[in-house]
Length: 338
Image 1 (cartoon, rainbow, N blue to C red):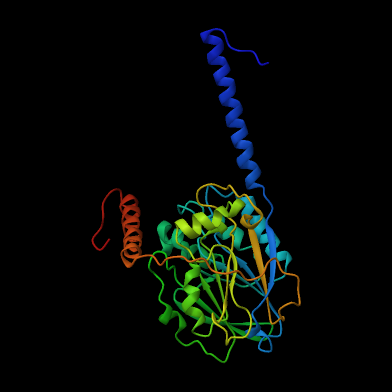
Image 2 (image 1 turned 90 degrees about the vertical axis):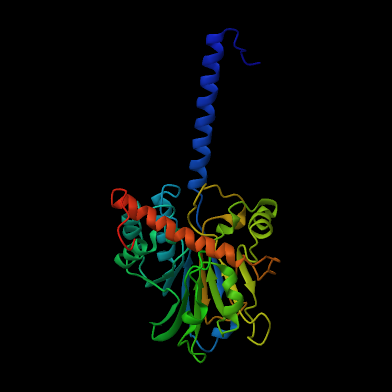
């Protein structure tokens, strides 16, 4: 039986020791979660790419969240795991940063280590932290960012169209603009931070959409991620494969993958197999069933579309944050036009 403190001084010392132990246990727990391995999840591309693409390997990263919450070693490990797969292209679906611009040099240094060409789109945290500054850093890291636009990249002699939808969470997505000039007779892949944009992209001939934002809920025990991200937050898509990778005459007419991400914005806590940090590989051109896959397509959740007023409120919040940053930069003075 442990000793019970009998005096005020002993009680204070006992409480201090207990608090120190708790703090130590908390730090050890957080460190344990930060050191969790990065999962490698592999899938064949939709049937729409077969006979149109010989074989292209696309590595998907998302929600890197460079910042205080996610250690640099985690980011570097993600780059190492990605490079080890020798992808033809790396795509990153938003939230490069966490809450500030303090880690942009780190972002440039780490992402410059990716061996393959890199194309990405912005997420809500990039807008909250300062989209222009994040874009400048990404250009320094040789990351091509698509903002409601498309590009065609030639990989191993094969052309692949990439559609990049800007962040829908903060009201910056423009699907019509992003799809302008996209050819139906050439293979195409779409990127969007918010997965629900896939519903419309499929009907414009896009067989595969890659997305992020949800972090897979981070805690996937007892399907808590589907309760938190699906029922409470209203997302139809939480993590993994959705839609249909079969012939394009089915409905829905395409597939979606929502990545679990690498970083975190609040707590690095990740519990459950589906919530682990991940790099996802898509083998475009391979037939379904030709490789062992992590999981199959799953049905969408009911979800609910955010009201227009809420999206507009988020967009205004981005502008207000930018004004506050400008005011701080100029010593508390907002210059004309700011």
